[in-house]
Image (tube, rainbow over all chains, first blue to last red; front, top):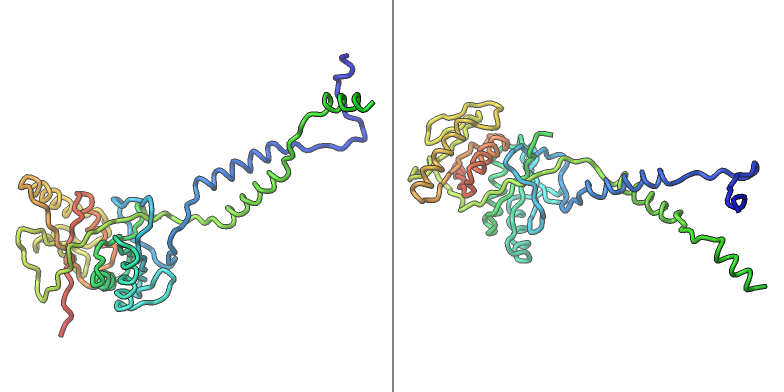
Length: 142
Length: 152
């Protein structure tokens, strides 16, 4: 009886690699990336380095916004990186406002951009009836 | 004969789950996340509800309101009195103290604090955000901006 239960490996048998620790590690890494990554819901201009404000809050959702970037030299770009003038901003905001009630202006302005350029953008948006403004900031300087 | 073979199969073999496909999918997902993810510092929102843009030809009128002026060099004036000088300090302690007191007075009077920010054209956006940050810290989100009329 005991003889039948005894397991032994013959000399010519192949070695089997234990995959369990590797699977464990893969799952751990997978869960880490799944939980820590965040889907970007709007395109950002990587050349824009936004200012720092410690009272800013990370939003739960980013819907109902129209995003404009203001580069260091004062150029205004749309979400897709295309240069726009204040008149175009007014038209774009008016168009989006017709589709999206409660639309807000999301300003991603560089920290070194002259305020004049930002004010032009806000004024252009206000002309289209959108005066609720959100400024992108870092909570801490990265 | 067939009966005995079936019974031998039932007793000796244990059901085994093939993990190969699961590992394949896991690796694919892992590689996707490794390649697609990029460590970007998270951006936050600093909200501002504009009651309106005041277009003025001269200095703004002071009617029971706090007028904050940011000058070209980054110094901050409250009702024409300098409270913070130019510099890199983001916290603006002088302005913070003035807004705190103004907020307390407005609360006692039962009125809504009204802040007007007049920013020089060449001021960096960071300085403007510093001022908004102090306003936000004291719960003031209704801020008017002064837009200077273009020179004729």
